[in-house]
Length: 219
Image 1 (tube, rainbow, N blue to C red):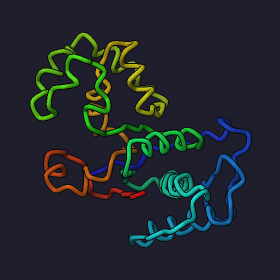
Image 2 (image 1 turned 135 degrees about the vertical axis):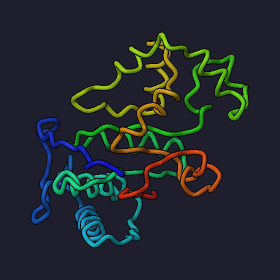
Image 3 (image 1 turned 30 degrees about the vertical axis):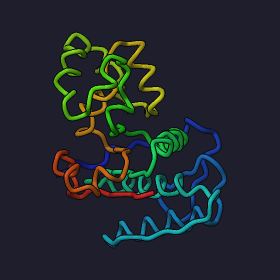
Image 4 (image 1 turned 90 degrees about the vertical axis):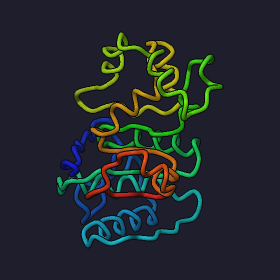
């Protein structure tokens, strides 16, 4: 089962954090729109009651940030067992979610789960089919990079890396971004990935995601 969501508050990261009245630990990195406050309240109510929530918000109203703040603020206050899976439709959305996560004052461990071809930095392996490449990729990564891979983990909470940043870090430090993220997914509080990893039955069976007590956001 999932452990308590180990989220810490660091309001010093931004001098412009705005706390929402009557909602404990709800901080926005900018003055929130009324719609954003409404989303955060809806998220809190759904989590408190253990129900699903269907939220519709116009483009440009900061929906992604509101969803994240709503969930992270709730669990930073209650310290209940939880893991957050944020599901997106496209890879560009993954990078957007990571960018929004970085804006918040909530500190946590996060990973990205996506297709190998999106993370691969080895040109000689990029043409190898996903299913047949695992052993080849593992062999090419080797065990010598273990310290470098572990070095990306900050014990005071991991920094949220987008896909381009992970690829660049992999090239610089000579490690595989794909397997780096796979390694740390079980211990991460927040996992960002395309929605087909949960909605496709075969993909769900091939991955061992801990869904007990989990919160799933589908954007």
